[in-house]
Every structure is written in C-alpha cells, then in structure tokens.
Length: 260
Image (cartoon, rainbow, N blue to C red; front, side, top):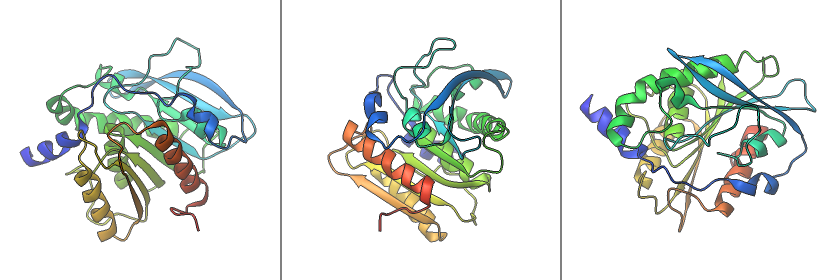
C-alpha cells in the first residue's frame, strides 16, 4: 500500500494557479451549437455541481466525461455559462458531443487538493465519486446507447485511466500530464484506445510516468499513442492545447489515433 500511495502521489501534485483554455474553443472545427446547464448530483455522501453541454443539432450524441486536475474547477455563477473552458468543454460540445464536466472534488467536500499526501489519501474515494458521477451521466437521455469517452488532466487523467480500466463501456480516453495509477488497473484489460499528451519538461508529473502507462497499455495490446511535446511543461501552451483538443476530437469521432 505504501508503494501504491507513493507512486500515485508522484504524479498528482498541482499548484492552484493555472492557465485556462480561453479561446481555444474557437480554434477547433465547430459544426454544432450547444445548450449549457448546471445540475447538482449526489456524489458519495455529498453533492457536486455538474456542468452539462448538450448539442442543439443532435437529439442523441456520444458522451465526453471531462475531469479536471487537483487545482479544481473554475468557479461558476449559478445558472450562468462560464466564460473560460477548463479543458475545452465548449470545443468538444461544438463538435457535437454531450459534455459532462463535474466539479468532482466537491464529492469529498473540497475545492482543490494541494499536497501529495492529500491526493494519495483521497484517491480511492475520488475514484468512487467519479465513478458514481459517470454512472449518472450515462443515464442522460441524450447519450444513452451512445459511445462513452473520457478526457482528463493530471489528477483527472489518473482518474480517467482508472475508470476506463474498470468500466467496459468506455471506448477511448485522452489524458494530459498523467501516468499509471498503481493498484487501480486490471491485469487483462479489454480493448481500449488511449491518447497520452505529456510535456517533455513536466516537473510535476515526470514524463517517465506517462511512459510507464504507455508501456503497460502496449504490453496488454491496447491501441495507444503517446505525444511527448518538446519544450512543454505540466501546463501545455495554448498552441499545444489546441493540438491536443483536435487530436482528441479525431480519436473520439473516428477511432483513429494517427492521421493517415
């Protein structure tokens, strides 16, 4: 257990101040408009705010479940669509996905986590919170019988990986600045497509963590691509974020990892 917590903790530490995705939503092809709403869902013993983006042009659409890092989600006013994206929620909705963005840390009564010890100690409970919120998201009428995808950053990436290995309905995941969550992966995972995006100079989640996840997935025959971005750190630049979003959309839309 000590080894598991130590390994999990290495990749999870985030500082509170982080850049936003800002106008990246405008840089990705946008064929759909969307309706934005907020709901409060039960998450373990507490409730969590959930932001939902539903494409207007499609009665049903695939689900993208988006998980932020340990710095937490941007604060929002009740009923008002936020100006900034956390991880490109608007861009994904504009490409005709139903996007569910939970403020999942509220499920353990927190807004952020700032120490490795806190993150490691809370990871099992956070995984259960994320799992219950994903299960609720899958009951939305607009996504039933549609593919399910996960998009996560740092702590949200680790949670996405762990969720994908326990839930067979998840078709693909795209994760940024994360690695292999020790103790939360199956030995014989089913088919899954994985896209890993990592800054080559990341000092928060060392690139070796992403490479370990890459090796694990390849060893189990999963379709995987890892992009190691030279000159980038834990927080990818605006240009790299736009590239990651475009590649994520292509993966979720077509199932292809690389452009032919």
